[in-house]
Image (spheres, rainbow, N blue to C red):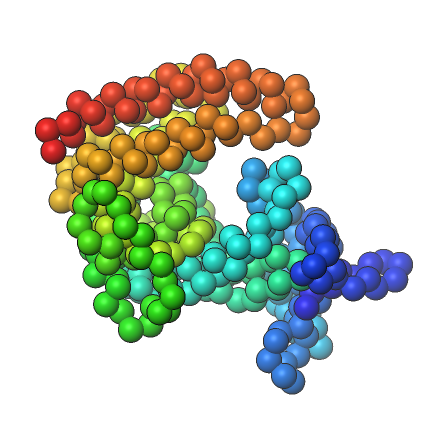
Length: 326
């Protein structure tokens, strides 16, 4: 159970049948671990921000009795910018991260699961300083160019590990196997949130970009052909220019990055799998019009329906030209 500490009177967190309280910046909460006899945990949030699909931020987690120093953690609450709560994503992402921690050991680093609270739909993970490829591309394009081969090698090794994932004894028996009309048998572990924007380059103490890769935001885990996982990674490389600034957005996908990605992942790429992933991205991104008010939503809708449609058409045209013979 998790409850917020008020400066007036303590309030109990709402249970799973009620609307949970929102995590807020600069607030203090107590988490009671489910294990009998466990000491309560104090969570003091730093900055918390609302994203399209969740509220995220950093916090300091410590033992509520005596320990004041604590350690920095990453918190995620599963409520979108329109106020809808996503219970299934809250539970599925926790379970998927546990699977990924074991399955991807030695390939990439997965932030450790630290605490999960149902009453607030909150998951708490290990905090790691990273920069994602899309942000690095915009902040320091030269550094991105140096690190892109590292990203591709990591993706190649990750797919190799996922390919025979269904044989692992630690996988839950109820893990769904999804049949597809493309690729091989549904024996590879897939993650719904697998894409390059959910991969980070680890930063050192001085803020310098290093070669270690961190993967996060897994969504749910399931079994499907390995070609589906490869398509997620490939198409997400093609979407690195999506979004701000508008000048980059208007350019469309970077075809040179796609060509290099194909060279690295070619053994796993399938034309039908790519078209299926493109269809999903079209459905999702053409409806991506979240905003703080009506004016902002109207502006986003205009940009998405013009620049976004042109961007996706260019990406689809490249995929058809490159993979139509396969």
